[in-house]
Image (cartoon, rainbow, N blue to C red; front, side, top):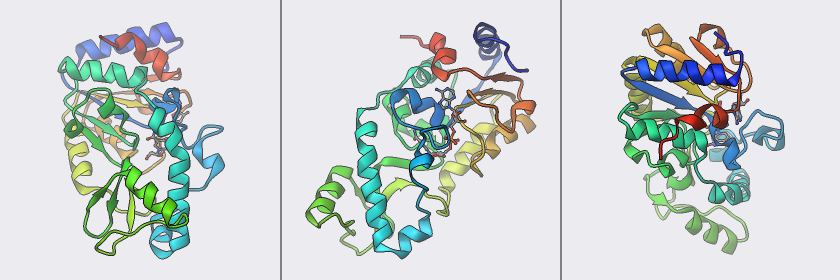
Length: 253
Ligand code: NAD
């Protein structure tokens, strides 16, 4: 059912939330656009500026690693300023109320953690771009450290002391999905009775499989996205409105 207007959408969502035992939110880049972080596919989104650098290109070429870091530091201005938006705050309210055991996200911006959800309860399918790791030994690096090395080396990406390449802790196209996060997302999806897909175009696989899995396991499926998605016809409630406007009324201070 596609909600005809915002008011109907909020009423219907409130009913579904009140009637649910376990709610699992699944979020995509759309929840963070009001925080100043562009999504990939909307007009003006990141893809209209730069095609992503696939993992094999990052590994194969020092120039690509330099370019990947250059782009990351350009993005840092918006990432560093970003604060959780109304969607993040509403989901954190449901979490604090014990309605949401954990949340699954495609996002890499750390804003769910910043909204008060314990880091262990944020299942990141695509990792996190607010810090870096060595691809060989897993040593963690802060971005400020990488940036300082990058600038002093004439804008060249630094390597780890073990010789491995240092990359943001996000998952690039062509890079293996994190097995633990995938397993946990599957468990959460299979054990909820209400699944909320929020701000995802639902075209990036395997992440996009989770709403489908939830529906097949008998959960009610809600899709909140300002554009239609391929799964709209499967959903119990589809809301084509701004996420902040839809979820704002669910914020409890
Ligand atoms: P996407 O860009 O493919 O889709 C975002 C969707 O959200 C679009 O369909 C858009 O119409 C909708 N949207 C944007 N703002 C909205 C709003 N205010 N209200 C309602 N809908 C809104 O993003 P995706 O499906 O999450 O997948 C792209 C991948 O890009 C993700 O897996 C993620 O790893 C990465 N990414 C992450 C971030 C982030 O962490 N904030 C930002 C860009 C890309």
